[in-house]
Amino acid sequence: MTAARTASAPARVNLLGEHVDHQGGTVLPVAINLRTIVNYTPGDAWEITSANHDPDGDWRRYVDGVLEVLQEEGIPLQPGKLEITSSIPEAKGLSSSAALEVAVAGAVTDLPALEVARLCQRAENEKVGVPCGFMDQAVSACALGGNVFALDCSDQSFFHLAFPHAVLLLVDPNLPRRVADTPYAERAEESRIPGTDAHRHVVEEMARVELGIDRLDHGDLVAFGRLMTESHYSLRDLYRCSHPELDRIVDEITQVPGIFGARMTGAGWGGCVVALTEPGMELDGTQLLAFDDGLDRRVV
Ligand code: GLA
Image (tube, rainbow, N blue to C red; front, side, top):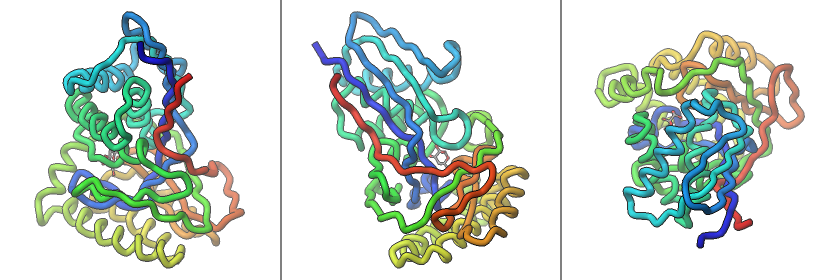
């Protein structure tokens, strides 16, 4: 009989490389210290509960989707009780769904983290119907605390880039949206077509990421921050996935001395703004982000 265990997986913010993962680009997310925890106790049947979710809510599709994909893959599963708790706000662009998927797969299997990420992306694509890229599941499963997770989505290779002497602030203007209700799929399709604005965003964002890795390597936060803000303008004007309130926040806070750059993070059409700042900066209405590691599982 399989042992009882706990697995947890973090949320993320993305610093650069937005809407390029589904086009095989490189992304630069970091895992943050908001987590979804799954306590698994083997039993005779599946019994799935969540302390934070509405019992009939959408979250069940992610859990069921992961279990279905694992079964389809022929991975031996022992039914049991899954008790879910989470500190990640939903529908805010912080990747609560990927963290839930990764924590569930981590709790019921012994698969390596990268494999967990791959199967969870499949669950989201095939069972939930969101054609997301690989970024969220990969960072949630494989991140290393204190580092930027540099993931090349063309071959799923990654490396960890030391985070510079700076802090990340999150601004949450309370603009929830479900990715499934946004034009995510439609815009991703557009971005495959040369000559469109969305395609131009992808090409230019990929170039910003290459430059950004080099700037981070050299500790040039001013230049990296500028790339973040340029990324926001491109998401606003070319990819057209921002929100007027996010635009207002970015315009406002990038005027504040000590802020290197700011941008919307995640799929967009709502969600949050992330800002890179000098250490010690405090701004009203912002939350200081701490780094976290990826998938954590322990036998209890
Ligand atoms: C969502 C998707 C990711 C990625 C981002 C945009 O978070 O799940 O795969 O496409 O949007 O960069």
